[in-house]
Length: 455
Figure 1 (tube, rainbow, N blue to C red):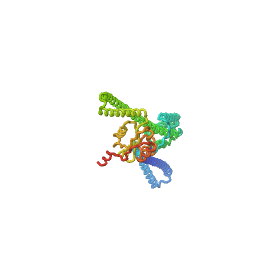
Figure 2 (figure 1 turned 180 degrees about the vertical axis):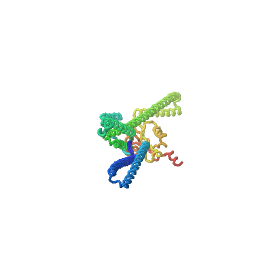
Figure 3 (figure 1 turned 180 degrees about the horizontal axis):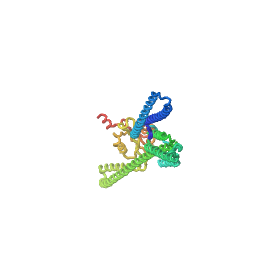
Figure 4 (figure 1 turned 135 degrees about the horizontal axis):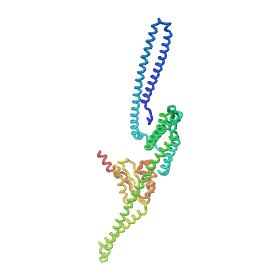
């Protein structure tokens, strides 16, 4: 039942009131008719008395009939009083029922979310603006159009010819304007509540609610020919669509910002690792070089000492390894696209044949994998492959594109989970990466399997 709807009980009460009123009216008319007939008979009796004096029996019967009709009239008056009391009682019941219905409506609205979960549908954005600011501007335009219709008296329309108060047309027009303002305020309040709570799951129901609110207002004021105009209703629907699209775009922008911040944090961690690794390697290199200088001084004194010669070879290898590691760190810093593509799974959290395919520029890729297996998932991730490549974004993109139709989350395209077999992933990797990859086919899932045993 809408905001201005009449329940079945209220309709029955109204019908009973009308029936009682009609009955009372008929009884009053009958009484008045009998009174009229009585007067006519009394006049006729007076006229016939000189002629029909012996007919006393007839007069007695007539007098009895008059007395009986008097009793009936008194009974009608009593019935009328009782009917008035019943009408007052019915009005009180009607008021009580309206209060109960209002309370029930609030409970229904509270439970709407649970009902609407069952009515999820695929929503296609009505408008396609570049960003949320453009949606906001368009929303303002629509609301300005609504204000313009209200100013021009085209939002809530009515016919003044049907409105008279105390036979005064001017008072009727004043009353009409007041009712239009009241009904428009009620419609706007309901629409504002609908717009504020619109979601993809309840969009169709929200449109239906707006139409229902409009039709209910029209029904309640049909005798005065007052109704919300089609043009104003369409602007409210347009506002609803824009509000939903605006909310979706704002959410997507927040998701993009969140993703960019996550990427920035990941890049900052990678840069910090590189700087710390370089600092550590330079320290090691300096240590080996100092050791070599001291060793060379000893070799000048003992050129044939085999232990010193062996130590020199070992230090030379350490210095070369350290230099190679420093060069690798420099390369990783200079080449922002170099990194690891990881293929990981979590059968305890997501089930079999669901893989996360992502990339990281960390020097130690397992640090990133371990972060993903934090408290937000019940079990740690298992690694199936860590692929180092000079163009990690390209390999990651090729894998994502190949399995685009297998995404677990088809709404948020930035989620990297795919329902696909490991063999299919291997095939795409071979097509886009010509080096050897070490694969782990069977996930260890140690905590998950132990949990199953413990059950």
